Length: 460
Image 1 (cartoon, one colour):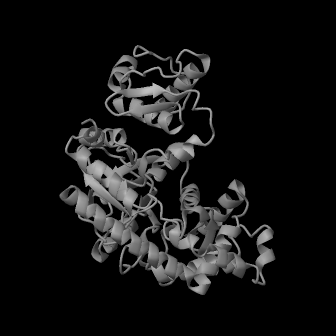
Image 2: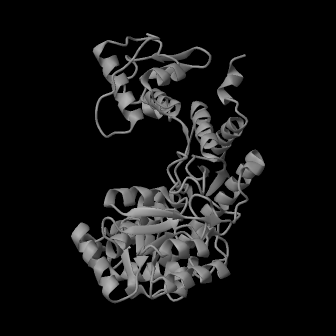
Image 3: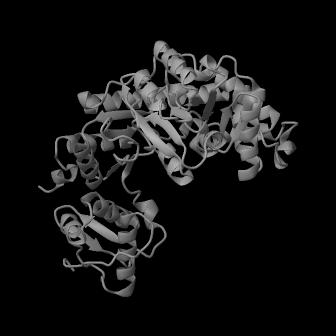
């Protein structure tokens, strides 16, 4: 079946998913039989008019699902009789994950049983079974204000300004909903958090990327961009995502000065502050009257908690955020926040975050050893992600080679708002199960940087 030419089903799903669906349908209908050899990826991409990376992703996902089996030097073959079993996904975990910016769960996992036992003795345990106020339970808000003051350079965090959320992504959504309407322009770094791009596309905000340098957003570029009437600027001053850059104190003051002159609201994402070393003053400390600070504990304690929070100035804006909470989900969930609050109160949060930070330090050192000068010098010794600057074409080629070698990196286009200003590949260091898996993935990326395919070593 080297001449297999599928018909992609219509729909809005990504092209690789539609190609995977076509493969699945042709296997189920008998068009492709057990043992049938699929076309080489490059041939199928040319035949269908698709990018090579799209076809490669579909083949990798098909192998992960047990639909095909790849043999180095021979090709990919249908294994439909095996593909029906539900256990295949656990037998073959798929590509090594360097694409998701999440924290290892080992430190939290080692303490969760003991924590659940402690929760049973809390006098306020049953309060968490009822609806919380729209701002969240006061005990949680107090704990999160304490956490911000300890880890994020927010010395004057007032718990009454805290609103609890189901993750920092939801906090960002609430902040933008309170400040902007569909069609409004929101400024951001030229390369930004991919989740912000997804959110802006969903809600209809117009993201405009602003030029950066080694410290992040350039004040003079922000000043020029803000002259067009933007309402807000979203930025990550500490370990900027995806580049890992950190704004110095003088740069932060300059950004605040521009925001005041142009009457811009600042949405500050402080999610990576725990990894930034000695915290610099947060923008919300420098401009409390015009800054919403969003953060959470998914990066620093455990991704599964999905606990976020925002700090907003009291008054009309705060009430608009609360109104958005009531309109979207009425009240935040309690039990993830309860676990995080318990950890903050009894000191476990500091221990967990410290262990994760140390682990990230060792993983970053490993990445620097293997990838060397290809990495932009990290601004912190504990950065959970690294940036490989390169032009757009080189980035796409690297991602494709890495995927063919069994490693998934962040899609190069995902964080880019202004392609002419920034381009490269982000590698996330926390998602792999251990450092051994990370090392295997990084060596595939290193081979891909040279244009080699790591799997070709097994040909001879």
